[in-house]
Length: 266
Image 1: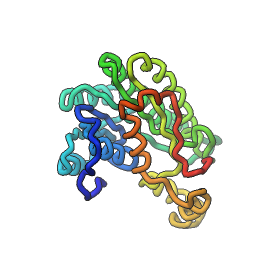
Image 2: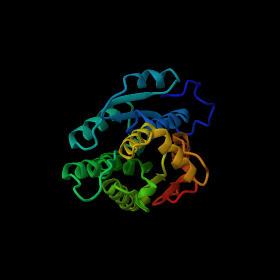
Image 3: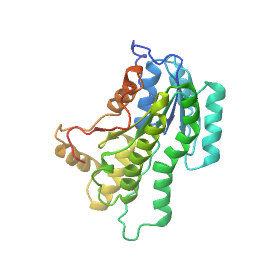
Image 4: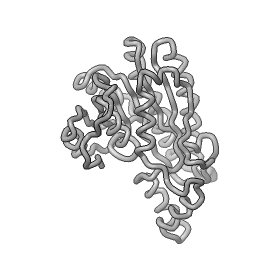
């Protein structure tokens, strides 16, 4: 949930900018929304399940916010959401593709519909959002597109073939977008964290623990012990990097896959 502390007295270099964050009601997306709002941006949070308290929470901190239903798997939902944001907040300057899902299933007997759902959410969804927002950024000669990837794109996670494939594909999409936007002041970056302490992590490790006959706490403790920094990455760390990449001074940083991995290779 949104931090109880007041908005920090940070340099508000995003005044006048409008940012869309998909998957913006929880986890990494919510933290990025907070960070961009603290730096002056008007933020639009979208997700399949709308958190009705989000608007009040952001507005109570002095932030301009729009909250709405968004299913990145559906072309109509994407266009309706983007049009609503433009109508309420103005032209879109920043797009953060944070919506994502994963399932634990080996390739053998992997359900076709589950494979398609993960790819449609994690890869086709960012494509649809980028296609809807990029033309306006090019027209105004300024834009920042940030995709939330994963270290799984370059390594692997056992029994998560669809997730790994979708995040690998996201790297290719981002690089193509970066070349399309480069002459027009538009950058495209992938932020690839390792395991981040979010509700998504807890849900995943709950299922893993159930299958192994252990507890979620034991599974997370084992993960922490295997990390060189002996800790889990926090959503606020991803958010701080995303906010930096939205600075004018970060224009030269594009086509990159920035790993936030606490020293881990997974």
